[in-house]
Image 1: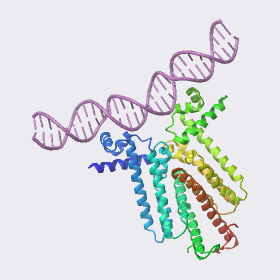
Image 2 (image 1 turned 135 degrees about the vertical axis):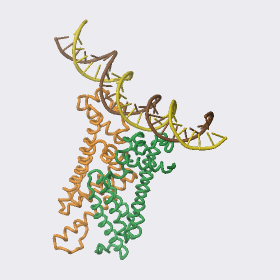
Image 3 (image 1 turned 30 degrees about the vertical axis):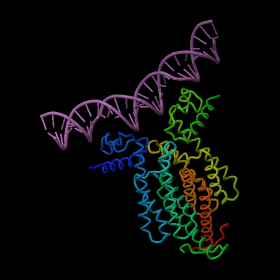
Image 4 (image 1 turned 60 degrees about the vertical axis):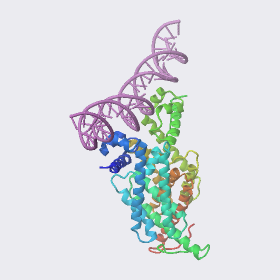
Length: 204
Length: 204
DNA sequence: TTGCGTTGAGAACGATCGTTCTCTAGACTT
DNA sequence: AAGTCTAGAGAACGATCGTTCTCAACGCAA
């Protein structure tokens, strides 16, 4: 087992522990036990706990982006791709140990006293908005739709985490349909002439 | 200065400290200094730190509900009342020390290891949904609109907190308008006959 | 085999934190 | 004035935690 394999073992164990119990309530000793490595090796690979935390968050960022993109790519039309975001959320919310967005949690717990954590949380959220922005661009509607859809997704994450309602993803999906279709209608009417509040079928 | 005044002083100081720095990074000594009371009196009024935390959260729940209701009552029509929620959020997000929803933060930091905190966070979110539910009921549309509007509000809170974009409230407001009007249209067409996807002016 | 570098196990250290205790000074009662 | 109760200041205690250190065991080259 080489250095990189040890790193991954540690990160995987830390991710599980930190996600389910929070960062500050998991000590390095528990992490050592869970990862099955010695404290010596742990500190050799990660000079401080903050390094573990950041490695976990970076790993989570990558996993999340890849999982989302995979889900979205499987969808057909641009409109379906946008809606696939909420399917991705729904699957995630139904996982047994779901406990909200790791970056929202990290920001809430450490963001005020740890700017590295605050930064990566911000980057994660901004890049999600950007990702939605690219999908929105393809259907040629106002970019502000991307922010609206992001708000629904963020809200679904915190709602599902705190209240336990995994259906939040479905409500977000329904709302997203309405918002997308309204944006499409508006784009359609704008391109055909100003001030005409046209009535276009929602599956246009 | 009587017992109750001391309690309020302590809760006010704790609220400020906990909200801006998180719960676990604020010690009882700092709270003592900020509140200007002796450690003895502090423990006399709150037998443990958890009691302070819970008192802070209960106070925040009341303040939040009152502030929101005040804002909503000032609005005229039921539709405007629903939209006033996002005006309330906008004002809040622009406050200098805004750092997200205190209950989301508390849940993220302590929810996994402190069921009192998890419970009050859940209660807060559920009662917000219920509050929106009552407003939605008055305009006679599908109750699921309340959940959708709640998702927008929750999403705006985390987005504004993490990315610093106070405009999230405005985007949520715009999205809420679209969702409300779509629900009104749907209710209108349902009451006039089934399967007629009628085109009703959005200010109906 | 001897010597050297590495590793694991876990003790040790220093800091922090929640909580309690001590000591002292002042207020109030009789 | 003497005694009693209360309260403030902060030391002290015990636990926890991040981090480092010790020491013995092991692998391995010469």
